[in-house]
Length: 343
Image (cartoon, one colour):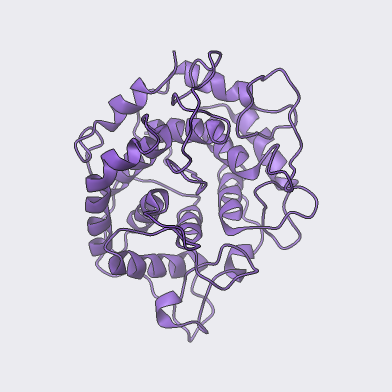
């Protein structure tokens, strides 16, 4: 049985609406849509979903991912010319190597036995931690840490180097001084006190043992609560408690934060996996899984073509909740993912 420790990103699986086809030289890449903003992300997540399900990962998929790695170990979201030097992270132009692509690729490479490449990616991340203990999406000079990037970077380092560094995630969490309905939720960064559900979901998954995805466990009715009489309640347990209440309140339909309309399917899926892995919130997990089944076709085809990132997250939801990925909301997720790969 392969290890089940996984990483994901909250940079919007299936949310980025791509408009251009993948380039002709992208044999092995999952997805036919423009990979400019999510090529490495969707490839890595697809590989991890197959690994978690004990499915064979095509050699062409790993070959494509390894070619994308930069000389210093980091990754950009996508390089159309893998022979060209990578760009350094630039938080002002939102370009160059980034922490999210690098962390997710590190996990995919680790689980497929490419340990040398995974360690180089982890080393790149380790060298770019901010003084506050967090990571920025584009970790350049002056770049501000955020919860999502910190969560995925910590998850990669825990997996590859078995290290846990910094208390940034606890610093963005609402705890005993907050209203009960907000306790355990996390803000996107330290400049805000507003709870961000997507960021909380990302962190809850990562903090849960480096995003471990074991065989389905018996999910309890209750979930951890933040006990205000003590400071010992873990950051992850408090986040799980918040997500259980939140998913129950919205009946599994987790909205986008920041006033954006619509459902945050990626955040919803990640929250479901986090709760299931923690063995908590039975009713919330069941309600949210049913919602994701009803919405699967809509989410997967949101950009016009099948989104491999969406398919991969749904495979992980099916695995963690004991559902059948070959018939999830009427979709055979494995077949759809296989068909999306460029030959």
